[in-house]
Image (cartoon, rainbow, N blue to C red):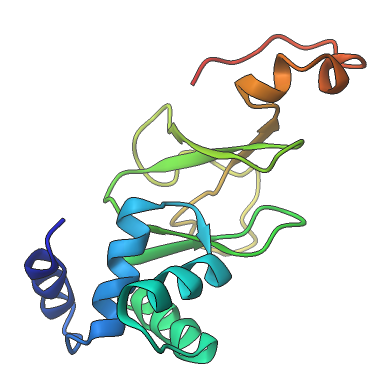
Amino acid sequence: MLVRDQAERLRGASLRVTAQRTAVLNVLEQHPHSDAGFVARTVREEIGAASPQAIYNVLAALVEAGLVRKFQPSGSPGLFELCSGDNHHHAVCRACGAVADVDCAVRRRPCLTPSATDGFVVLEAEVVFWGLCLSCSNSPEQRHDLNTTPINL
């Protein structure tokens, strides 16, 4: 996406257009499922000086505005991606940490209905599929004790 499009995206969310916000959106468009450290390093390469705290603040503002989605697989840092307006989940490789998008089977929120809500109105369900990516599942070291059938994504 062009910088102009990022500026329109920011304005559409009633956010001021800044070089840091635009750069963060560019990074996430090119590298979805990135952690804040990667985003900060890449933004610094693109625009020069940007403190890690400034990037954390930008990410928080973009998440709050609904432009960016944060998800945190167990045992991993928070990962960020652009909000795409779809309802998708993630598959995470237990060996290398690779992340892939997985379409939701029902395509609407929430895609799961809990057995009890204790008064909560459920708006969304987050599913993480854990397994091995294609590279790791083909590795004898990773596969030796698995008795599973690969899922094609």
